Image 1 (cartoon, one colour):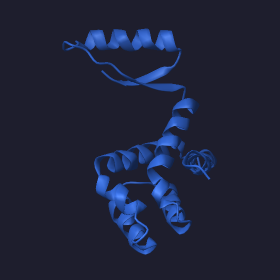
Image 2 (image 1 turned 90 degrees about the vertical axis):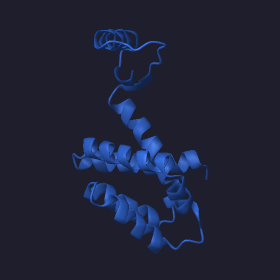
Image 3 (image 1 turned 180 degrees about the vertical axis):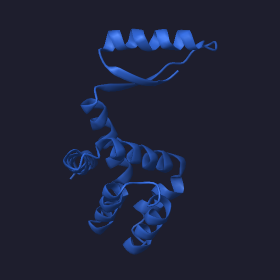
Image 4 (image 1 turned 30 degrees about the vertical axis):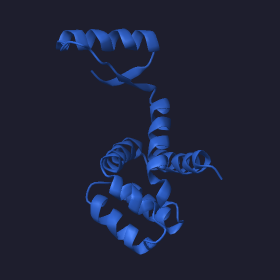
Length: 142
């Protein structure tokens, strides 16, 4: 089974959990936190993919890193991933979930690069114009 299919299935399952428990926004926040941590730590990504490291050790590390900062739903989801031997897909599942969340929330990520420092007024004008053009909410890095 391809990485995309696996990550999509688990991301959709997590999305369903968030919708049924009315915790969707918190799950989005938690997945952003986890994925940012994984982006910043190649060592953690490699550890999760390493078949030599036992599942119990991986779960203990994930628990130490995240349990104080994430919801029970996401914490239970991490445990489930490790139990199913899918922890190596955590980063891909997080990316897919956040992508699906953007679609659900009608948002688009925008990164604007400028040769000069933009004023707050210019940034707001760009956001307004992008909202008009894309017909979506945007959260951007301007």
